[in-house]
Image 1: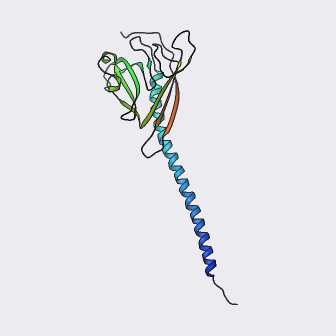
Image 2 (image 1 turned 90 degrees about the vertical axis):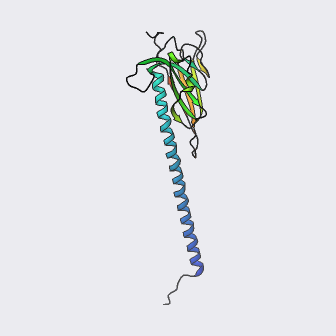
Image 3 (image 1 turned 120 degrees about the vertical axis):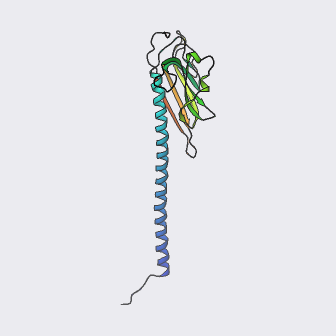
Length: 200
């Protein structure tokens, strides 16, 4: 019997098939890697957003009504009464003041700002910024309740009543450099208000 090798045509066909299979495998692996990277990036952004929301939620759920500091809400910021230390020093005494959450557009950050009541006439909340979340390009607050006793409860983009709303919805967009923007939205129910009081 005479042995016969591959012909040129058979080798070309085999090479073409192997190239197609290899290309399909590389494409599948590349696609899977991209999906994993996107999921990882989205997970990191979501974790950062959850940490920021946890801080905001904790503050709002500790709400207590004070006649000197009314609840005041706008579409991009709100201020509520808060009792806390005016400095990080653990030995500092707690003070009544206004706690404000707002968007610093220049820094692209969701900011938390506490201004003691004694300094409220000469210090604006936006002059202080404790960053809660970076790379925030959009921030929106909505308030649920009835500002007037005879009115029906509804959502509003502002809140000017001295009494707090029943709930606040916060929505924001995070856009880190080189990553796709992610949007987040949460609803916070305020603690049941206590009777109005004034600090001793």
